[in-house]
Length: 351
Ligand SMILES: NC(=O)c1ccc[n+]([C@@H]2O[C@H](COP(=O)([O-])OP(=O)(O)OC[C@H]3O[C@@H](n4cnc5c(N)ncnc54)[C@H](O)[C@@H]3O)[C@@H](O)[C@H]2O)c1
Ligand SMILES: [Zn+2]
Image: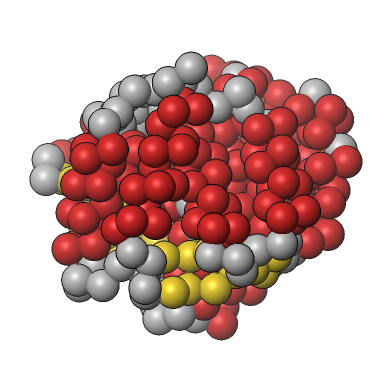
């Protein structure tokens, strides 16, 4: 994993540092929008003999599907991709998930490199080896673990990202600070302005620390038996809010912002989280907002959470925080606690 601010321009150099890389046919999967903004810069980094073939995926969750994977695999085959070809996924989390899955199954697996271009993709989806697509029945239902040969995160490309997408991704970094990296949390508390103004040094620090946190956790527990579960802080209720609002109203990171407020609420009600830490968590989450308003009924959110629980084997594991930089997984969060937390955030969200 490499985090920097000139990686796209120096891409050829990074590529040639990976052994065997220059001998391969190279394919780039990207979206038309990202290629329009940054394609020339990336393409300029390749030597004449390495000129890549570019494949496109239209933006949006609906294109993260089996049909597109089949189309792209056929395009790879037509263009002569073989076992030694290299795929570069150049885009946000959607391009990364589809590209990773395509690389996992094309000829039973080819090498790929992630070049994530959204903050969410840099700090979250490009790390950990999860790849996959959605089905009509639900999100991310088909996929596989396939680790990229490298992840090259260039914070410079975040300059063209909308401020809303940037802030949504930063909620995952706040989560990284809350569950494991108190120094990152303090940095985000203190440097809010420079981070939101896309100061490259500040972003490099945030992305670097978030990625290290996730890579460390995933390295210790790849298949999600215990520790990796803590990455789901804010996600039980966050996912339920996404589902209850039909995945339309909020970006993933924003739903997680709301979900983290709910998790802080439960942690505090149990007396496990000191009041002063709870206040700092809430203030920091709100400072990276505004979290968009939405309306939902408590029962809708509870139903969505129950559905999630059913899919995960019947126990409701919930991640709480006993203090900044710490997280614990518990299985005894009651419906009453859930309802109290959901009611609190729904009344704030409806304003
Ligand atoms: N694999 C994992 O572990 C994992 C983890 C978290 C999320 N995800 C997945 O990631 C996906 C969401 O990813 P996302 O938030 O990056 O969304 P996204 O890929 O849809 O990108 C968001 C938007 O930003 C645009 N964009 C991307 N880079 C840009 C840039 N540099 N400048 C301007 N515009 C740019 C895209 O074209 C798109 O319209 C979801 O499908 C989610 O399931 C996967
Ligand atoms: Zn998330």
